[in-house]
Every structure is written in C-alpha cells, then in structure tokens.
Image (cartoon, rainbow, N blue to C red; front, side):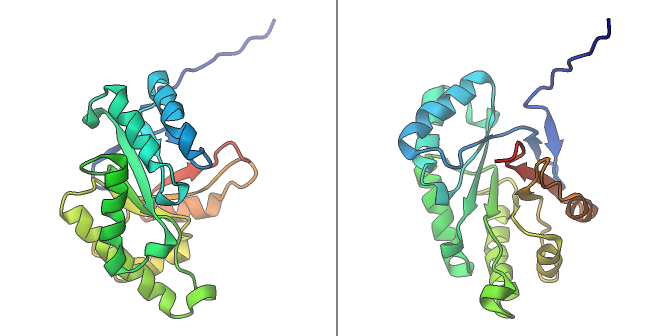
Length: 208
C-alpha cells in the first residue's frame, strides 16, 4: 500500500523581516469578525496557539482584540499584533492620531506591525496619489523611529506603487500584505517585492 507523510508546521515559526524583527509565519486574521464576537474568537485562537493577530481600524473590532489579549494572561512580548491605517486617515497629519486611536482600542503601548491598508491610486488622485502615499509613509517612518511600532509596511500595494514610494522613503517597508491564494497566486508580483527585500504576507490564503 502506498503511504504519505504528514509534516506538522509550527504556526509560530518566524520569518525575519529586513530590520531583524521576526514575524510568526501564520497569523489569525479578524477581517469580517463581528465586533461582538471578536474577543471570544481571538481568545480561542490564542488558546489554540496562535501568537500573531491581525486586525485593522476598518474592521471595527480592535477593542475586542485588545480585550482578548488582556484576558489571555499572555505576556505582551510573546504576541505579534498587526493593525492597519484606513484610507480616511491618509496623509501625514492624520496618521499619528489614527495610530494612537488604534493603540487605545487595543489597550497596547506599541504595535508589532502597522500597515497602510490601501495605496492612494492614480485613478482617484492622478499625480497626487504618489504624494499622498509618500506623506503617509513619512509619518509611518516617524512612528517607527519613535519606537511606537516594531515594523512598518504596506497592504495591497503592487510593485509599481512600492517602487514609487521608495523614491522618497528613507526606511524601506518591511512587509507587503496582498491577496494570495490558489486562485490568485501573484507569482510575478511576489518575486518583484521579494527582490526589494520586502516580506510578502498573504491575506485570504485559502481563497474566499
């Protein structure tokens, strides 16, 4: 009879970012998790062994994530928490206020990873799109330099967005979180981003 081998993967085995910070390779995402159900769902995930939790201001469930973390009894340094800046808070002047609001809802003193949720694009803003992204990123760089976040990055940025951002950035993004699953592999984009020394993180890896 033929056989097969099952290889168990530690969901917390890390991937090293370009600044030396390590991110658990599998995270628990809270997209579309109802705010009222978030605390229980995240507590169950933490009990199951997840240590990387992904949320965003758009999801309206950061408070539930914060409640779950507080009630878990786990040490903060054992967790990796990601949140994201929504499009309504683009621009240098808005970022720090939005970041602090996320921290307050999460009941945390710092984030492990903060992402720009979507890029401003040329269809919306024409030539101003690159300026909006650059000014938003400048505030991200300051948050990082101030020690308020351990790593900064992007979400849903394609390589052409990233290349434009790098023209003015002083700190290279550490992560780009994009949609990747068997129905949309983004192989070319992954190779381009990895060539820039940016870790590519999948959202929706099982499809939808």
